[in-house]
Image 1 (cartoon, rainbow, N blue to C red):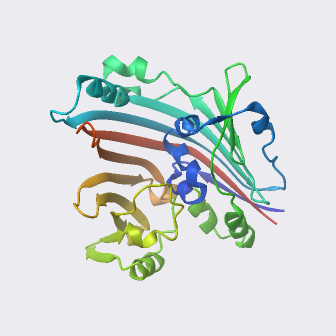
Image 2: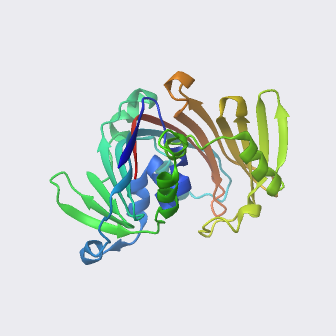
Image 3: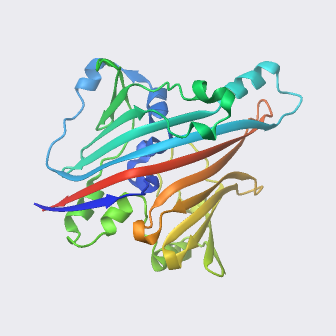
Length: 319
């Protein structure tokens, strides 16, 4: 077996969502998503498919997420209890995790998440630093083929949950077909999504996107309804516009915005920061803002999130 190893000092995992579907939330609080699913019985967890075949891909990395929310505005129909509950949900939070991920030759996978002590408490207000760092996550979470098992600090199983997630047969095929010296697979996997100008512009043309060039930055506006046949719809409306900003010379996605199609109301925006080309030109931090409005209460909120990625280690095995 031929093994290609990639050491990435300042790396990221944002494009992991392209492969993981429901697992994409691992970047910013995966356990919360898993815990929100309906808990299954211990017997169901034990019936999960065991890993088989040789691993074709392994990765481990650390991710730290800092989020702070606030109520931007309110109207008269918001009751006091609505405001209180909203403020609880918007309290500052900080989480740091160690993530290990493995894909096997048959498309099965295993994912382990271990909470770590936060390192960036200084980004939070002093009055909430201790409380904000008290994690509600399990001591360890292991996911094997759509079943997540939760463990306490003694290593005892405390519950499990089933959720939807795809296998990784297509990614396995890419790894096995790639050449030993080709780093495109590692770039795609670790969060640098093969930002090739010709491919992106081809997609833009196929989807009828609007392309504007402004110096070194190219702005592309996609109508997400054009992608309805290519996404795993989970009940969310696709009547939105996505605006992406690229620096094709440096092979970087600089940021993006999400807007309501009918009103141009801003729903989300992000800025993406990279390591230097000498260090791999990989994503090291993402700063984002999410805007929401509750139609029942009229409360308008904003959540600011900073996500830091580090200590990425990638190993791709090829026959």
